[in-house]
Amino acid sequence: MIVSEQLVSNLFYGALLGSVYGVATMGLSLIFGVLRIVNVGHGAFIMLGAFTAFWMFTLYSVIPILSIPIALIFGLALGFIIFFSTIKRLIDAPELSTLLATFAIGIFIEEVAKFVWGSDYVGFSWDIGTLYLGPVTVPYTKLLAFLCSAIIAGLLYVWFTKTKLGTAIRAVVEDREGAMVCGINVGRIYSVSFAIGIGLTVLSGVLVTLFVPVGINVYMGPDYTLKAFVIAVLGGLGSPWGAFIAGFLFGLFENGSYTLLGLIPGVEPFALTRFVAFVFLLIILLIKPTGLLGGE
Amino acid sequence: MNIRAYKPLIPMIAVYGVLITIALTVDGMWQPVAYFMFYIALGQAFNIFLGLTGYVDFGYVAFMGLGAYGMGLAIKNFGHLGLIALPIGIFLAVIMSMLLSLAVGAVALRLRGAYFAIATIGVNEGFRYLVEGVRLWGGTEGMILSGFMRKTYGREMTNFFSTFLSDVLVILIAFSAAVVTIAILNKKMGYALLALREDEDAAKVMGINVTKYKIMAFITSAGFAGLIGATAWTLKLTYIFPEDVFNISYTVEAIVIVMLGGAGTLLGPMFGGLIYGIMKYYLSVIFPGIQLLILAPILIAIVVVFPEGLIGYIRKKARDTRLSEYLR
Image 1: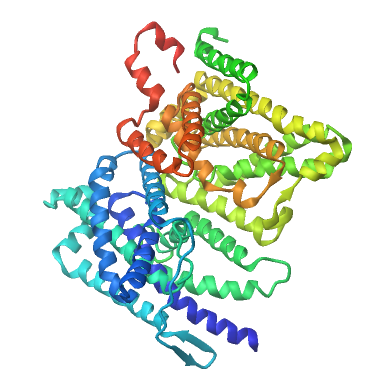
Image 2: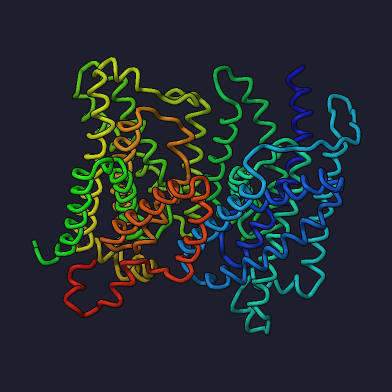
């Protein structure tokens, strides 16, 4: 009885966290879809968002929800700077170059951050009460994070389907040459998509802090990069919508399997959950590289 | 056998000679040179796959990790037989890493580009979490062999292993990897891989069995990685921790070295490893703590302005001169 209650509670928590994972992966998928570049330094941008939330809260007592637009603008600016300084020259380069360049960018950001903020773990607590719902107890901040994730994903969906620029981006994902023939300025789409991708990722870092308020560290990124890879593949690389839904599923899976694997004696449920996740990743890549939710 | 085709080994032997002479004659230089040699060996081994095929294996370090465990298991289980445990360890390291590479290669090499890179990250991380999750080979606590080795082989012998024998073995591994590289380059396999790297579909249409050559390069490269793990890690450091031996940063260092020197060349990994090793060593001495801060922009600059690497660049400049016979 206890186990099933724990499972329900963990699954609920997983669903909330999963929505944040979804937003945290959309940027990766968008950049891959448009530019065909895997951003190996993805997690470093999440870290920047987390620090944005931390500093805004501790220095100016700005609540994390209000830090979201600040992080977005910061990320957009950073995205444009990185695009025009490096990525622009690497668009048609072999994978080797782009993987290495994005990795180096990630390291550079981490090291600058370490130089500025030091390598200690920091955190803050923002308490606005807790919701009690049967076996489930959940702080309102986490519910708020879920709500924000859903709104952001929804806004993005509307933007992609209803606006001209959004439609143009989808056209480039579909067929680069075809879009060019139709008179779309592909170069501009590249820069805008990269900036939005980075902006979304930095923004997601703010939401992440609502789940790990004390786990903010300059080296927190790689962990999220790996998770984002699994989620992106699950949702079909290059599809931001797939990524959002896959993030949601991943949150459920992560928390559910953690609870169930914890029942097996003599194993580390945390590590084994990761193991199962990576096995899934391989299976999906092999049998359906377009992702579980991808078309074709 | 065409002796002339092996001319590029001459500059390599010269560089090795200089390095070994410095290590043996200058006081306190043995360990730094051994440090550089580790990176040269790493680059040389990874180049056989990454450089020759153009596929990016982000999980390369898994083979090194498995090699490290192979040697650790041999010392732990066969240590009582005396020194015979070392050759057993080397054998185990090669077999284990080659078996994993065969399994990974058979499935993951069907994927290309970014999909292959992500799949190999998955293999590496998955393997690490399996070791930690089911507490295989000591799980998170790893294997600590120093006490055991001292008891079995004596303090002096253990020191000899970790400060001399392991370094000599790494030098030998680096050189053998180079010899294997040039042998491949001069054979049909080298031309097949060149065609595959330029355009895989075209190579396939021309009747080249691309899968066979890809897997051959992958397994060879993985075997050398296992050897490096067994010698440069287990034998030298006398401990194995899963988060160290499956650390993705070694893969990235290997990629950096190969790119710095020139992917697919023979001499590239040697110069790449040497430059990278020297930079990393002296930057951490002069600017402790911020060496990565300096290294990262250099890396970005190399990728953007210098994508063919040092040897690739020199070869382009030296085309049709006598020098080009010695560069490969």
